[in-house]
Image (cartoon, rainbow, N blue to C red; front, side):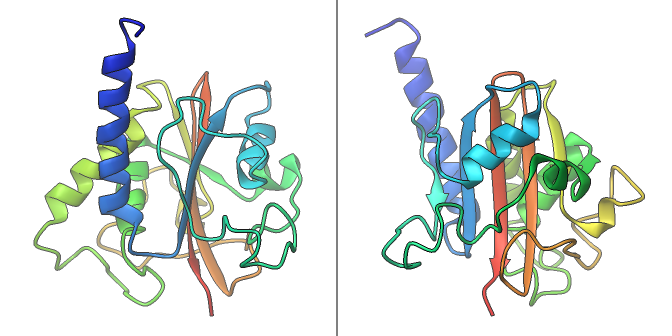
Amino acid sequence: MHPDDSTRNADGTAWGAALERLLDDVYTFAKTGPRRHDDWAQDVLAVMDRSVTDPRRWQTLDWDGDEKEHGNVRPSYPFLPLTPEQVRAWTYPITAEAAADLLTSLSQEWFFEARPLRGRTDRDDVLADARAVLGRFGGDAVFRTSSDLARNSDSPDFLTGELAGGRAFTEHMMDLGLIAVSTDEVGVFWSFNAN
């Protein structure tokens, strides 16, 4: 075993546990992939298309990952066929703190709950899990969201205000996503209203 493998595996176990506590009970897509291009949007599309795997071999969540379930529509289902230009244009930069707040909000059915975290007794624990998940990408990571709330601010209040989607990235009535970009990896976290 390489000297760093035990630490990496321990980090992967903590990552998987936090990811499951956050997003396993809602209709989500939470996957990571390697950073192979100067244009981060190309790497995001590779994750959405399921053509890459987690570079650390850590756990992912993918409710639509079974091709039999979606009838081999396309590898990126439920995501639409998108271009890098669309991914860049349809997402907005947000701060790391806002990204953690948004990921926390995605832990519930955000479309049906106007203020999903306001009344939760475990709010601090959920926020800690979101920070742990996003901590994987490091202190220099850049975060983007599809939420229209970020159109005019890089630090919208995703915890107490009503959440808003933006331009649809899927065929579902509503979807809301978060993208994390580091020098080595990208993460794609998306929640869907499947109606």
